[in-house]
Length: 203
Image 1 (spheres, rainbow, N blue to C red):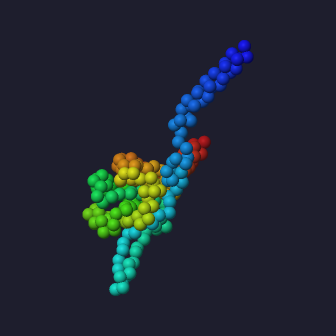
Image 2: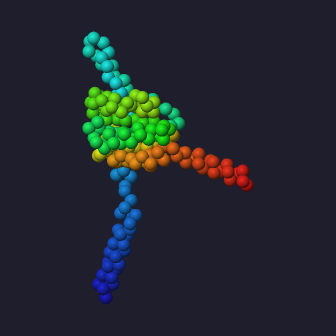
Image 3: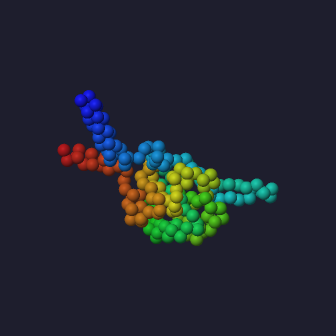
């Protein structure tokens, strides 16, 4: 009788354990450590890109011009675009951005690539990047972006709001209507504040 009772208890315990392991939230919720760094940090990281390299003097020393997150304009959405000058999808995405630039003028675009600066300059020249005050393009000298954003494909796009908080990432390019909507959406706190004011006036 004791053996039968013990067996019943063990079966009940195994059944309960099986049910607990079948909990969908336990299976589908990724561990925080498995998320890419940008999804955990939620803020625009410190970065630097090389936007120009020139001979400093006759000795052959180079003068490198850097652009960092400290140079970004305040109170504007930031769009990070990691691209390859040899990527057809990157060329398509660039054309789409320029085609819709009037609707994207609120955002500031940072284009970065691991390719040589001459190749990047060729890409920038083709699309007249210097004629757009809300764009900067350069080389990622330390391979920072692919590591931080866990980039597998280009173009990779990460969007940050005017407070430099992470909004959304696109691992294989963004649809223009979504990009336009995101960079033109007021900050959540501003929306809440406006609603609160309306409620106060009506009360």
